[in-house]
Length: 473
Ligand code: ATP
Ligand code: MG
Image 1: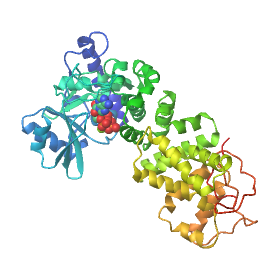
Image 2: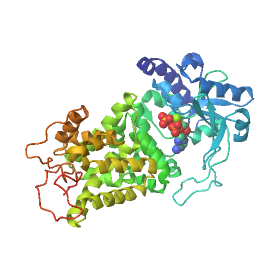
Image 3: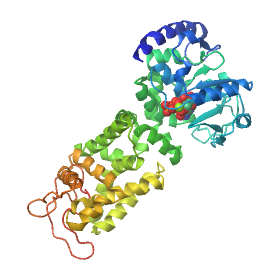
Image 4: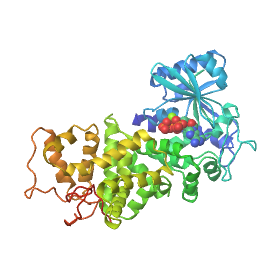
């Protein structure tokens, strides 16, 4: 794999560089002819392409259409990474695609995409996009709103975001077609937007997130001109529908590069437009808040590397925990709400605030709330409650979350987690000497445990320690 990077790609790129010197004017994508890299000069073999992709490509070709594998798959294969999915670009129009495949669904609002099912695989097949013209509907920031003009292969290439994403694998002769200098950028390990960066970000601000994510995925640097406008334009993310941002955020954080992605997003001022409450919590510089978020991402990455399941519910539970804990503490301490009331309200407020930016579907926000609401129940380690909690359907996720709190240095949480680790093994460990749960109460990340204090009686009465973390100054 690594050999590919230096050796074959190096040789291909030397030819490419020479070629581009001849055909490009100065800079930017003013290339008149594409570079074609024949099969014997690049490392992508059909055995590294999925069966479904090959079938779709051949079916389109046999029906007389142009058909290419494109985008992340070509890029990743050339960079020596296993592709996550395979995208296909074709001259066939959506209705023609639909007629060719038994199982095909057209999706997408801004741009129609055909989802073709081949056995287990679903392939995204898109018709070449045409150039952006005055006729494209835009909003006041320059964002393209509707986009169903079809074009040629060359026009399609210049509509793609980064040069390394605009490489096409031609099923007719297995060559690679490069209109935008992608092969050379791959060699330079540089992520470069095609065309004028500011314009391209304005057309679609999500490209700023993609820049950070793809650069980290490939371990490339973002070309200076591509990086420069990001900070300035970061606020354009507010124009993006929250449902689309949800998808992008998952790609960023349910990823083996989750930590690097967080750092990149913070560096470019993007993160505050995605998870503003988390950004604020990190800005406060509280080591255990940083530790908790960092740990959650490290754990997620490790699970992905080990092929274990990861859930957005857990991710968001961690990301928003500091804000939740702070709000909870405020509602209990400053406004005198009983803990159960405060817990519900804090969760509602934090989630509602977050939903303004990222639409977290209910199927994730509900379990996320449950993970939070089960935290105080870990502190109650007496009698039948222990068993009830151990058999709770959400026990595992909540316990993992408690472990996370412990790992991030939240006072008392590590000891509590250890107790529950033992409890799962069958015999209940002894409780601490004074028979009181440890004072995890209101131990929001980083805070010293709160001293016991007297509370008024009534329905909201509890022992110290009944609240999940909750204090932050
Ligand atoms: P990965 O699949 O690893 O997340 P990818 O680059 O393949 O990365 P996809 O979302 O699968 O990302 O997109 C496939 C291709 O479509 C890209 O490689 C790129 O050519 C094009 N593309 C995707 N999003 C955009 C965008 N916002 N602007 C322009 N082109 C895009
Ligand atoms: Mg892809």
